[in-house]
Length: 193
Image (cartoon, rainbow, N blue to C red; front, top):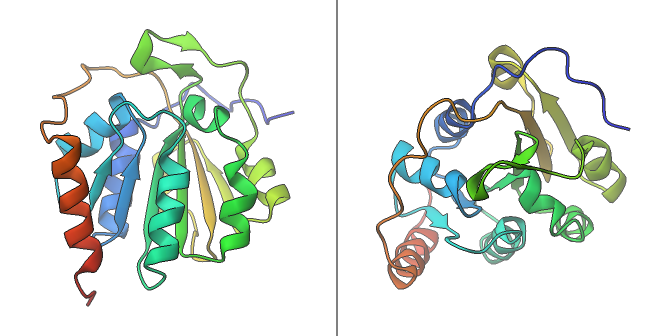
């Protein structure tokens, strides 16, 4: 059973995205479909971002492929609670990979991009990740917890409890799928500092 929420969620998807970009400015980042990809696109459209427009449940598998292809790079899977629930079988695959993958699950308790339908229940993604073999997993509910989260032992999972959006969803991703792939391929093949 997941731990109850301590308070009304104070974190937002925007805060989580900004924190990950600040911590890992050179990471290859794969974002799930809908508002999550829009948030990443509006926060910092960069060649390292792989926007999965219309591919719910696939951010962690695609991120895992990138991490296996480029083991020298940090790769972030920017996932949602509904998206991960569609593909829980990815957890043991990520855990067994030994890659520098950071799996960020932004959990607002709903499928917000499709109308706000509630997910089945709040899931304990930390317990699921640790049971699958992730080296570390942390649940955060506040900005202070997010800033303090230690995610150095990878693969790692960050379970960020957020509230629903307070503002609009932001601009849609303007790149075609072909452009997104070409940009990410070029960014993935560039040498890192």
